[in-house]
Length: 450
Image (cartoon, rainbow, N blue to C red; front, side):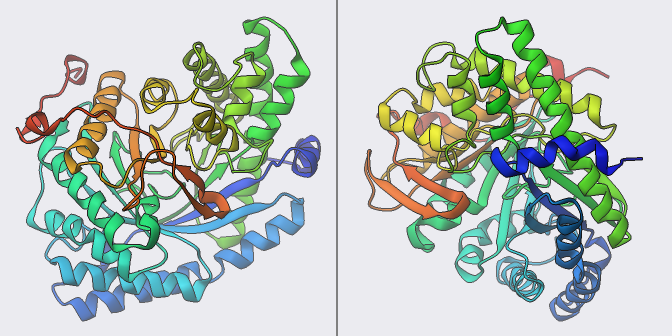
């Protein structure tokens, strides 16, 4: 279906414009690993994952060499653990996480996603136990990523879960060095079941037993195209971005399908999200600035981001019949050199980021706030993002870092893809009375559409 000559032009992108396949993520169902015995469950998990994932890295490396396109990350995702193991409690969930962590270590996988729960309408005893275990799990493992979905357009917002997550995030920060565990936890609204990107990846309950999803990258490629287009009008600029997104999506699907074919597993989706890195030239903020915004966060930024996100989706959807995951433009602050600069300049604030999340593909991502930020304020930030998500019927999320002892303007350098987190101010006014009401915010009118 796809030939090598279709991606010849893309090969140039890998050399000069930082293009890579950001991740090939092997999703594995653990629903058949359920057992009332912890030891049997642990044994089943290992027996399921190790044979299926044993060649994941080797096959990906083979395809890299074949096409000359780098695959930056080779990862795994599993069924949200709270579903097959709902009978377990906190200590037992942590033991399951340790098994997953050991599997990842032996396989050479950097992250496994799926320490997750879907609690948009309420929490079972097992889900509540799993959520309470997250801080200690983060302290006991290295490679496990966690997520909790607390809202959907159909269900509304589970404010009991939102309130709990504020305290969980504070506890994660306290129990992991430099609050590193916060980088591996995300709160979702309208979570997709086929997202290949960590920290939010998990293998959805409607997925087959095993599948291969691919996440592309390419901000540098789009940036080069926008700069080359010069001062054209917005219609022409949209066409430039669409054509570029088409090319990188074709390359991504080619690589993903080849990895799936050689692994003997079904191909799932290609996530066409533009995922930045802390490298200059590989930044979403730089694309927006190339459109004419002096510094990301200035007035017009949200409109520029909407144009970028929409054009990427249109171009990507023409290139593949199986677009899924998040698909759009990520705006993780600490992982994007231009976003970091915007915070340093004072042009980018938490409030402006919130506005931008109404048109990007996720939400408040890798934002750092002072260590003394109240748990209720964190919960309120999550609630605001959920409100944006359910009203716009889109995925939103919060990945927030609360390093203990830090204050506004401090910097925490995580290195690698996690980048440099600059502590941003939050509102000095309290949200406690609002958050502690509890219950569930009902679904909006657009959620009733049968």
